[in-house]
Amino acid sequence: MKRYLRFFYILPLLVLVASCATQQGITPISEEDNPPHHYLQGMELLEKGDMEQAESHFDRALKLDPKYSNALAGKALIAAMKAQAYQDENHRTVEWQRAADFFKDAQRYSDGDSQQFSVLVTGIRMYTHGKPPKWLTHAQDLYDDAKDLKEVNRGELLFYRGEEAADYFMGTAAYKALQFRDAEDLLSNVTQAPPGRWHQPAGTLFKKVHKIVRATANYTLTNVAKRIAIKDEVVRADVAALLVDELHLDRLMAGRIPNPKQNQKAAFTPADVVGNPFQSEIMTVLKWGLRGLEPTFDKTTQAYLFNPDGDTTRKELAFILEDLLTKLTGDETIPTTFFGQDKSPFPDVLPSSPWFNAVMNAVTRNLMETTLSGAFRPDEKADGAELLLAIMRLRDAINIY
Image (tube, rainbow, N blue to C red; front, side, top):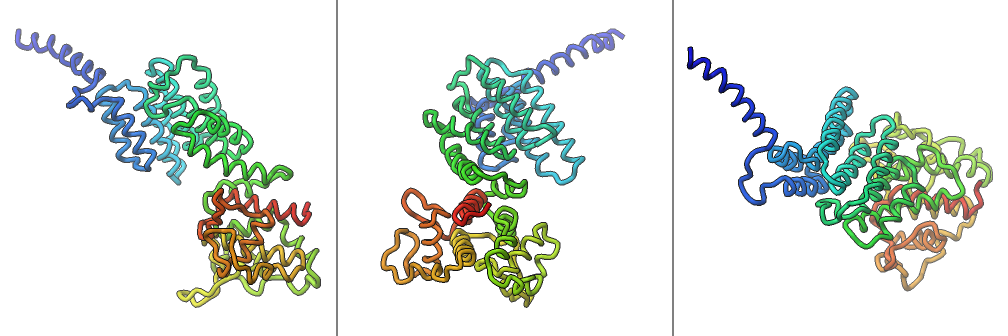
């Protein structure tokens, strides 16, 4: 009986000890086996796209310290990224709730302004990926809270390394929410700050946003155009959509080309266009036979296809713009204007290149831009911002309103 009584009294003590051990975390096996190290490694791996290994580092950090807020915020970010990837609404909702729970704990356990800042910036990223209802408003609230912190120590910001991180990630959020002017202002704050970790990515994104803002200075974009504008790589269907929606191609061509009845409809409907979200726009483009957007013969299917999901390179965009200029102005000399030129102003486009004339027309007419070194980058894929800017500049050049 006494033995059972002793066990009765000892059992709660063992549970208490086990509970304390869980709350305090496990014993590290080396000097580098500590929560800050694993948090930093996890965030760096996440930047490289290795979500699985990143999460294992966050998990290790939390085994060492279950209340380590930075690692909890990291877990919240990963859960939000998983939620973003799910197609099923129920799975997305469940994963987002996990993200929200992790983030709530991260905020509760954050200690000091520096740790709070890191948690809040990670929260902005969490909302940007998860996109729950009113996500931009929630991200803005976290941004405002981060900017209100008075005693943030840059040296304690293990991953973010500077307070400009808040501007960068809020600018990214505004960009993805299609709030281009807000994004431009926030990213500008980063580019004007002393060079740091986020200076280069902010500069790259700022250039894209600035192109969109310049393109839309005198116009109001459709939602389709806005969504295409933020794409890193545009496909042929995107080009067709913008030409029809923003250039008003059908009305424009019918009004400027004699005998428009000759082109009432496209000769045929390519099989790969049927059911495409931009089928109508693609058929309008095919109707007018734009160079660079013609169907091509596919050996596999033994049929002419449009390839709506095919990439659009910068040289292909130059061909399209040149053909539009020719058709809209009626100037048949445009496609041969620069034939026979001995020298090229571009280090990566020879005068003998088939696309030299098109590139020259696009650049000299300010429809497309080169790098600071003068390179045109003909084989690079065109992005949404430069496509939009080129089309809007074409509108201005030929007085389309």
